[in-house]
Image 1 (cartoon, rainbow, N blue to C red):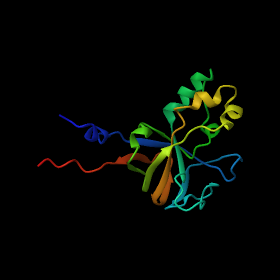
Image 2 (image 1 turned 90 degrees about the horizontal axis):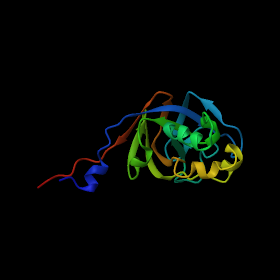
Image 3 (image 1 turned 30 degrees about the vertical axis):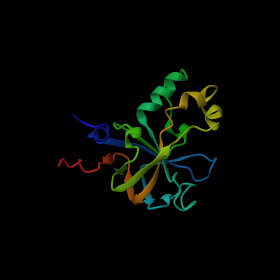
Image 4 (image 1 turned 180 degrees about the vertical axis):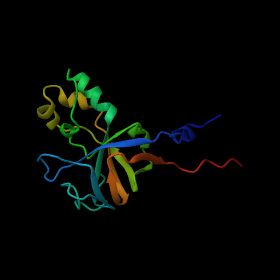
Length: 168
């Protein structure tokens, strides 16, 4: 019989990096790029959070591509452009919440799940009435950068799993 702990490590899916956005200023427009430099313990070069508080849990923000259409549907929209939700990375094909307590690769960059990325009140003005509530539970995650490098749209996103439990 499998334990709940061992089931948490069954995550064979490999996702894909679909989109990269940088926020040069906290409330400014996003820059959409095809690649970005990521620095350990600092974040993404060109993002307003880069080099912020050392050890910050919010060095990179991620959201699932699949959740964009869910939020759009709740808002009676046909689509939801990623730049409106103000996350750095949009990934598809892997459940970001399943990465809780894990480190994971985006291309050659190693990230570590650091918490949920809850929506802020700005979603109400950006997405329209109900935007904040539509984003609840769909805001994605935050991550810390353990090993830096360059990420590219199209890179694989994959959990780095703990070794299997040894049975005596």
